[in-house]
Image 1 (cartoon, rainbow, N blue to C red):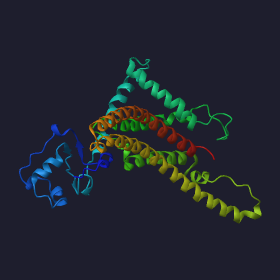
Image 2: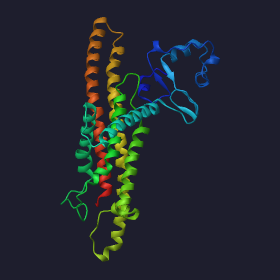
Image 3: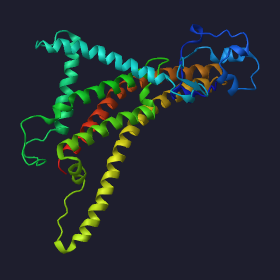
Length: 328
C-alpha cells in the first residue's frame, strides 16, 4: 500500500481509477484480503485499508496467491500489463481481420481507415523489410541475386511487432492504464521473438550446422597455420554468439529504457507541484502553471516517441533477421 510514485511505472495486480469511482467499505479486518493483513500486521483499523485501497480495482486471481499488490506468492498471477497486452492483441485481431477481408477481394482500399493501414503496411514492407532483409543485385550477400523479395515473407511478423509495440506504447498515454513496454518481461519477450525468428530463418536458409558456421567470418591463412586458424575461429565463434545474444538483449533494454525514461520525466515535472506546496501561494501557482504546460508539451513529445520507438524496434528486428539469413 506504499504511496511511492515510482510504483506508477511498475506492473501491478490492480487497476487504478479515480477514488470517487471505486471505494471500499470493509467493516472488519476479516473482509480484507489475507495478503494485505498479513503484509501489514501493524494495521488494526479497517478504515486504513479502506482509504489505502480506494481507487484500486483489484484483479481477481483464480490461479494464484498474492504476496502484495505488486508481487505474487505462488501460482499464475494475472497482472495489469497482461490484461492490457490482451486488449492490444484483441484490437489488432479485430482491425487486421477487417482490413484483410477488404483487401482479399482484390479491390483498392476504400475509406480513411483502410488507406491508413495500407500506408503503414506499404511503409513497413518498402522501407523496413525489403531494405533490411532483401538481397539486392550486386550486393554480394548471396551467390545469386533473386528477383523475389525475401523480406516480404517477414512483413506479417514485422507488421505485427510494429503495431503491438505501438499499441502498448500508446497505452502509456491513457490515464490510469500504463505502458506494458515499460516492463522488462514484455520487451525481452518481444526481443526473444525476433531472436527465435532470426535463428529459425537462418537455419532454414543454411541448415543448422551451416547457420552456426556462418557466424564465423572466413579466415584466409596458410595451411601450416591451421591450428592457429582453428583457435581463432573458435574464439570468433564465441564472440559472435555472445554478440548475437547481447544485441537482442540491448534491443529489449532500449525499448524499456525509452518508455520508462519518458514516464520518469513526466513524474518529475508533476512532482514539482507537490514540492512547491509548502512555498508561498504565488510561488506554488507559478510552479504549477509551468509544470502543467511543460507536462503537456512533453506528452506531445511522448506521443512522437511512442511511434518512433515502435519504428526503431521493428527496423532493428528486420536488420537482425536480415543478418541471420545472409552470408557474412
